Image 1 (cartoon, one colour):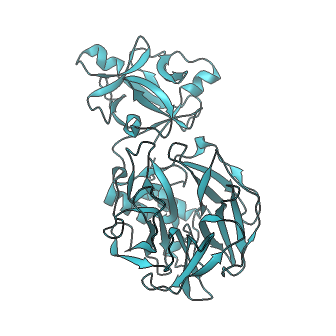
Image 2 (cartoon, helix red, strand yellow):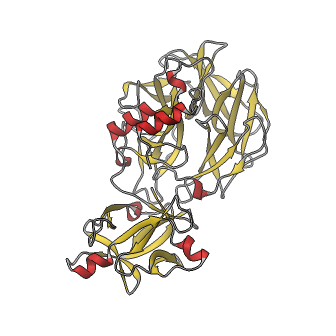
Image 3 (cartoon, helix red, strand yellow):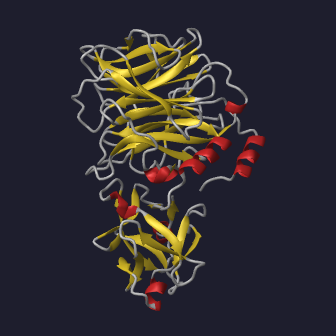
Length: 460
């Protein structure tokens, strides 16, 4: 749920103020206004298993806790490239030293990774409500790719570094320096440890630079650090990290509270879970803790992006400009990789992602039998609602009867397994709640701890 402006002000007054941080935090002394980050914005592109939800424009989502995300603009792109391949991947947002933003992205439309491309897409933005000065900048003249940019301020040079994945006969990180993101210095090798590497994310904490990347030799994510941020100055300091079968695109972000860090990892394929996450209280230690998927909800269909801290005013401005979703998703409490969906008109719980991805999107409308309750109308089959029939949940078109209206109405209550989540009590069988059993939805009496978990959902 979103916080009000008053709540943001209260949090700031309680001391929830930190230095401005992005997917590549800057060195220096940001102004007091930029230190008041109380929310986050996530930039990404989208893909789904059968490409139904694939879109290679710039997407944005917002969060007040940095864990649970709500897409903006109905998960449609807020801007799309008009040159090059006409598509982007791997968007990266940097808050510059003057407090404005620059967006960098891979110039690649789709999944043909055999293409050579020496350019990056670039936009300027004062507040992420509009994007200006679109251009492409050429990073090198090699017959290779220019993937997954990250950028950060290097105070000792008075320049920004742009680091990206490329190949000079081996998979390495290259760097170019710039002051304006229009002209860049000649490219040079930034990191080449003797094995292939991919997808760097680099942040600075005090005087130490931290780089997380994928080791192509073993498929694991490693953290390296440097006291200067200079090319070829990094030393690994963590053991290999991975969740799931494969992972790439590490994304490092400091909590706005200033008390810790989070590391995100993108699954290798859109047919798997889209993101994994860890947390640590000390970035300098090799001490990452896996986060349960129950604790976070990535943006819908999101792939390989970046996160930047924003102020309460910026959050409010983004929501006012682009709007929050007109739909919700229902995430299972005890199977947090699964969402409520319909398939062949049956209500069920399936692992995300899947296609058609719209099967999991619901308009949560005033209850058809009682406006104090709720009903769930399908987004891709408007006029059809989740209702119970012989206690099993189906997706059916309303027949206008009182019985249908009652069958399709639920009372939203505090989650039976966790009060910060939600449960839904049947309107006309109030001794029964919506729950899953063998991944099928039904209404049942709830008595055991397992029942309570089966009947608890996150509305997001």
